[in-house]
Length: 381
Ligand code: PLP
Image 1 (cartoon, rainbow, N blue to C red):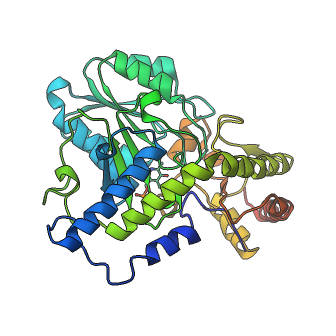
Image 2 (image 1 turned 180 degrees about the horizontal axis):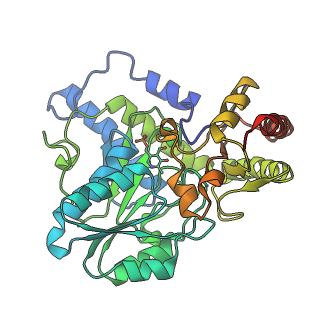
């Protein structure tokens, strides 16, 4: 079987798994208690914080808070920051192709009186900087633009975005779920005020995430309860999951240059093979894209049929975002880059990881060719 759905779920890295198994020997500390076991758990969190901070160039480890995943981080970043800074203005701006875990908190804020402006992207999914400049005003408290898109792989010009946002006195939140560990991120260099990270996308277990908050940025909690994670994410931390996320971040930082080159070679071979097929097109940017990401659309067929047919051929691919694929709605990302509804329905996404190799590419291209031909022969479109 060939697994090409890493953007939906990454297999936990064996090194991370054995690191996590180190906690199986009666480890039971709660980081909020003062007994020795609690202090050990606090140390475990502190080490993980250092490793995650190092991955994204954050000089103060305390600027990282741990959460239950990217959705939680995005909610705290968008809602928590907008609500806490409401006195400075009641406008928010988000790019039109953000993940729903950013778009829905933004819509929630709209219902409570914020004005929401979506920032458009071009046909490759790159944010339109002129339009962003017009959308962000001195009353815009938070602007959210992801580092890279999970459906089309496009990497955004974050430094330019940060310059525009800061010029108008606002805060920039960046969802780096898919970019972290794959391309270099430096919150200082890039001018990022809040940064979302997912533990699983680094090769750790699902259910742990992090949010970088630049020191001095004021945020209010979205969930209320105890004082864990500076009160911003109350509830006992998933200590082992977070420790594993930290270890995954350390490994990702160490191995990123070489692994990203290896993945980009697979990506480029696959793109060359598939775009050589009839009526098959790349989606997203041809060069400014994540190294592990290749995405396509095929005319006159449905992405779900491609996904199921490929699955029967032993290859796991995606169509649209895993979080919205059950709704059968056209992807808001593909519509925002200008595709018609019928074009947006025929998408296929392949995202690679450590288990993949360039030798698999001919089999993948062959399977896509066979699938597309067969589906087109029976399509009523
Ligand atoms: N943000 C982006 C860009 C994503 O791709 C995803 C999920 O794939 C999320 C946020 C949400 O992640 P989670 O479901 O782990 O909370």
